[in-house]
Length: 430
Image (cartoon, rainbow, N blue to C red; front, top):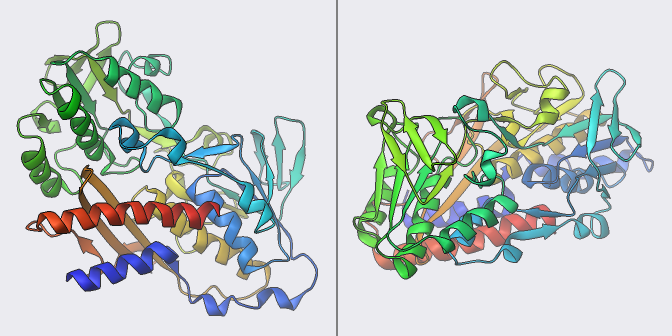
């Protein structure tokens, strides 16, 4: 993909996230002046917030309620910039005020305690029981701590994963600041599938940026459960250029897979029996859908939620839709932009079904920027379509940053990353 075409693609993708032949949806709400039903959306991340907003955009007569326990959403995208000292936590925090004031979404800050798909009711910790015509669940992820001997939720307070942004991000940042110069930072990414495939390697880059400025004798060791990773060649070329000798990557077959952790001793043991001691350990466990999805019986044996990939309706419970990281969405990665795209497709599917109309053929999009340094950006973009009931990549669409790009191109990509973040957060929360 040449530069102009690539830039144009990302501008379009950044502004839409999904193409559905939207003109086919315009005016559906005019069929009735009364409400066409009630939709509950559980989870206010990129998937849930986007879906709630677009449900109302597609049908302003629809009663939409977003249920989210927190009053603010802290994004995983750009949380690595906080670790690198480039952004502050307040800059990646968003509220739900505009969803209510601008789009008429009712927002309830409470915790869902149970879902009854048969009765089509949701119970809240505060005591309310809410009925629905359609339910959207966008619960996010949970961790398989038990997959690593010695690991636990309690252990993550000392050996943070920081894979749900917020308190964990703060813990890891404080540890990096407190670490003595010359210390070793270990980052241990999980095997696939997991949230944000390029995230651990951007994290290594941002931590290296911080260490280069403040603790230049320090090292970063990546102990990876995988034998390859997203945008690998681009990341490694950037590391060599910006942080020569600071970052070492060990693939799974060579001892990267972690078998156990000694939290008190700050030591990881690899599958091959090698012990690795560090000043700071960022251990990212294998993942699964969040607990609510399990409680509601929406998951398969692998811990993820199977769905009709055209509409995101659960394959297990009719009338319940699952979007975002918890869902099994074919070849789409588990990312904020993918969740945003899925939220729009899901909203269109629900509105058309309530009106007895046909869903326009959807096209799904994912765009992912990563910063290797503050002025060194790389990206990957992809378009997906439905084929035989599965979401697959469109051959020849999208692409990755060129390997031989000059410094000016990398700087523009870093600038585009900031624009991408502003665009997607505005689309979801404003």
